[in-house]
Amino acid sequence: MRDWLVEIRGPKSQYKVAEEIGIAQSTYASIETGSRRPSVEMAKRIGKAMGFEWTRFYEGA
Image (spheres, rainbow, N blue to C red):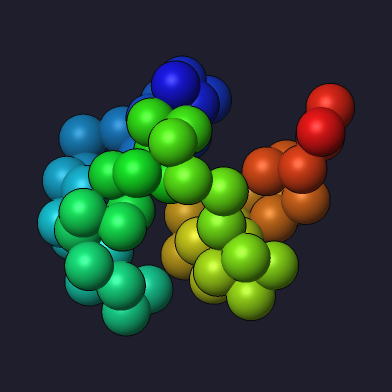
């Protein structure tokens, strides 16, 4: 589980975040739970939409 991602998302729904970055809610949910690692392109889109550095997905990998 990427608790840090859930915390950054705050009260915004997974659906809303997924809609903003152009992916399915189920895809975003898989990224948030950690069962799926986003591509670099996807990480950049998520980071930009939510206001954090996209490389955070790859820290400690």
